[in-house]
Length: 185
Image (cartoon, rainbow, N blue to C red; front, side, top):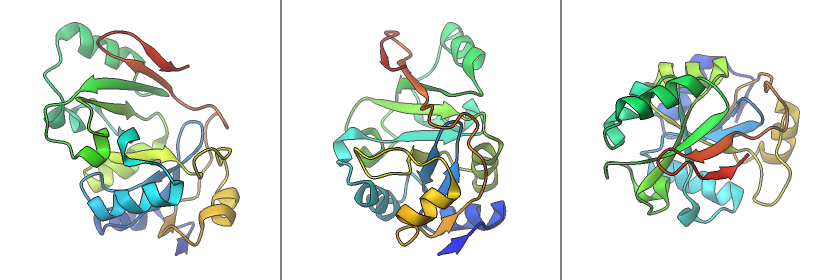
C-alpha cells in the first residue's frame, strides 16, 4: 500500500481497480470505481457490509451522475444545486445503468456532490463518480484522520490520500429527492 500519495496516484489507483481511502466532509471514506465489481466487493468485505445496502456515490458535479439517473425536472435540479456541493446525499431514481452492487438492487441510488476539494478532484481526475462509504468496519466508529485509517485499515487498502476532513465525525445528511424522507440527519 502507498501512503499519503498525491492526487494523481490516487486517481490512477481508482482507474486500475484499486481501493483508496480519502477525506470527505465529515469522515474518511473508502472509494473505488463503482463499475468495478471486484473493487466494490473488496470494500464491502473490508467493511463487512452486505451488498443489499448499496453504497453512496460522490462526484465533482451533478452532470457526472446524469447518465445514470432518471431525468430530473427543473425543481429537482434546483433543489440539488441549492445543496451542492455540500454534505447532502440525495436518494434519486436511477435509469438501470448502475450495477446492483451500487444500488443494493433498489430503483434508487444515493449520490452527493462533495464539498471536499480532494473528493471532488478525485472524481474530476478519474472521470468517474466514486464509491464513498465510511472508512470503518460496520458498527465501528468512523475514522476521521489518516493515522486512524492507516492503523485500522492500512493492510486492506491500496492507497491513502492524506487530508483533513472538514467537520470531523459529521456524516452527510441523506434525503429522498422525490418524497423528502430523511434517512439520516
